[in-house]
Image (tube, rainbow, N blue to C red; front, top):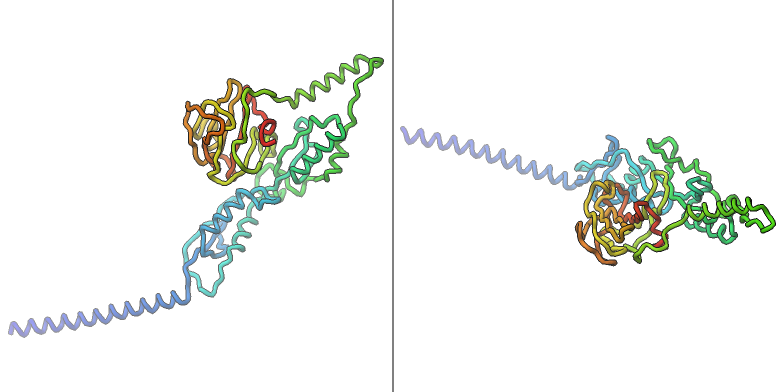
Length: 357
């Protein structure tokens, strides 16, 4: 009797097990079938959202974001200098029907158009008073060269200031002017409007008071553009690259150095030998990112800012031409470049008087 009971129990277990196996097989087959349909009909991709709204889909979020970052930092290499966004796009992994087309170009254009584009232009100034505007640095340089050739009395007082304007006067909270509000002039128009006939020294028959006045004017012009002719050291160019921002007043700030754009990791060499008095990130050089400061003479210190890497330490002696760092975009920076700054007796001076002429 007991054996019979056991056999009945075993048969019941066997029946339940077969039912379980059938259900499990059904689930597995159904899962494989569903996954097969998904594999055939869908693809894994990323949805791209901006300001809470999906603006498209991409298969390669890394490549797309790199393209966006490059444009934000460096513009288009022509008229747009950089772009400011209120919010960066976000990415979410998802499934998309294979019949749906991803379009990175369309997403890129939507992201860029949602921001504020800043355009680089140049002001020709006299004592920080902006006299004329041109779109290219070469045009500004041509104006000054022509005025010097014509012996214009104000030629040595003229400076070129890099400035930025945004794409619309209603965009954002920036203090920059709108590009449409800037009145640009041709080179010829600038030369004609800025030209001032040379002053003539009064003859011995003339008034001594007039002669004195002329001498005062001449001294003022010279002193406003004077730079030390002997720094006590020779200088070499610290890195290979393209000048992206020059010394002087800009719409955003008073630029105390020279920016040389170059790929990340490009070697930075000591323009002059000396002792490293700072090699870090922070006060008193906040905003410079990773920064090296070299005391070359008792009067001259040289600052190398926004480095990606530092190869020297505080207190170390460096020789001219020694690699002290690598180009980067640390600190307050909109792209890979070296900020090259020279201070003579505590005052920032224009490096282009000595290098990158």
